[in-house]
Image (cartoon, rainbow, N blue to C red; front, side):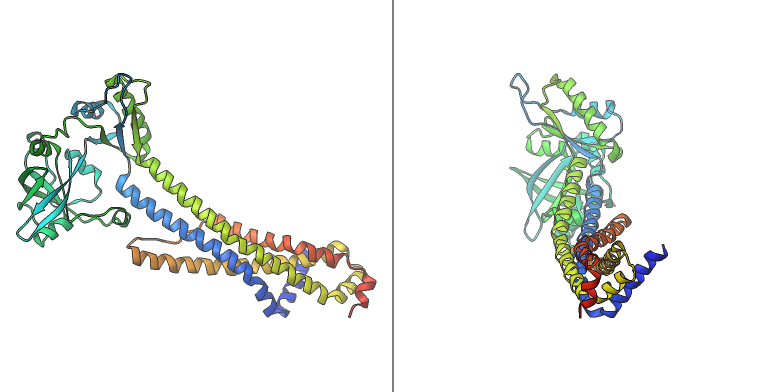
Length: 413
């Protein structure tokens, strides 16, 4: 142990006596390590922010779909009775509902507004993370009666009326050839989910209404037959089992067991795919950035060769006094490892600081809470890797120093 400390001490003295040269040697290592740390920390921060945002919108949600015909060539349609069957027979279901969307036009005293209409049941309240800011959501009684009521988004209310508190106001909505006055009974709060804001284009006016009201207006029968419906599990952990149970139930009800014509689209699967994509991108860019470590390692090899040349006489004296070949080799390997380790530490500090600054700027620009993050294992892994680079590229200079002939070394000037 004391001998190892002596090697480290000699290596440190050599680095200190050649500060400028040692620092320039470290630059390649610093750039490589800082690039890897920066990319990994930013990647982790973006991934966490995006996944939190997506989970905040779609946690536990899945669509049950029938996109294909059965073996008899008949197209499969779901009905309100199927929705009730899921509600009654599938465990861990929080809400289940048909969902239909349609563009329309809303008018006020100034002009017409493009309107995105979402028609569903009162269970749709659970599908949206934003709370009701004013008023209430439409009730089951209003749903059964097909009452001309709606819930409007906060931004839409401001567009139409200049105020968010518009409960009791009426809006004129045109859907297809139908024109109807809808009474606003609730206002949904503006979304504070930055991911949702980035993913979705918000129309001038957005409203939610009973699907039965939509059918009364248009006669399209969207609430009577539909090719998919939305299910919300009690927790995201239950979503896979709920999806499996729903498919089995619908296959039994439609008599299509084993035909694989009823499928599911889980948001949990989409979240996993996004997570994998971000991880792959981060790993790929990190590997590209790590190429600079190879360049830095070559720089370490070059400077160690110069050091061997400069210290040839010293090596000859040590070997003449009985120093073993292995001792000489370890001395130079220790110096190479120390140079890269110091460069790695500086690179980690620089990378972490740069990641924190970039994430802060991105948070302000995108309105997202992005926090640079890197786990302890990665930090130690990067530090160890930087030392390994130094040892690997220091082997040749160290072997060259260790194999010098004492007589030839002492003659060197």
